[in-house]
Image 1: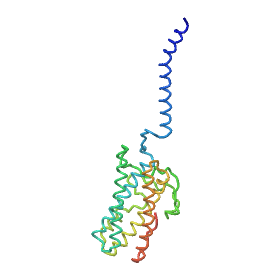
Image 2 (image 1 turned 120 degrees about the horizontal axis):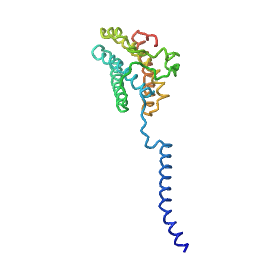
Image 3 (image 1 turned 45 degrees about the horizontal axis):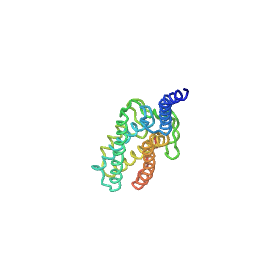
Image 4 (image 1 turned 135 degrees about the vertical axis):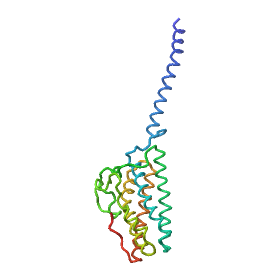
Length: 231
């Protein structure tokens, strides 16, 4: 009399036990996925290093492209023309990538303030950037302000008015300072950005512009010029 009852209870428990095991496996699998980062769709926020760097460096780059593009109609120096072409092509590509990331993340391409994403810390890697130790509270620009190294409207107007050797020297001076001004941002983002692609690009920019600063300093000396004070 008792055996059938036990068998019936066993049959009733099997589906319940299977359901419990299934739920447990789902929970364990979900926990592993979270731990491993599988299936996560996190994107940088608007105040993140990744977004701030992408906005500010693309803006910084676009002025560099503007200056570099002036060389084609104002310089006859093969070295200056080659350098300007390389800067224009490289920074146009990089600015496009950074603006593309912002669009992908659904974030604004511009901001009223600049460099606030650097957190009020002091300049990182100031020795290699030749910029000195400057508090980021002082470097962060307000609405409409210029970021470190950027040329003023008056300086751009002067550059547009020049040609020949005078243009070459002034172009090299402004572009050297422009590169130096961008190094601080690139070095900071290279160490603090979360997205690997952003950090890699930032480090590439820092390395490239450091090398180009050396090149332009040598080019200035060969043309009787000297760099402007570093920003």
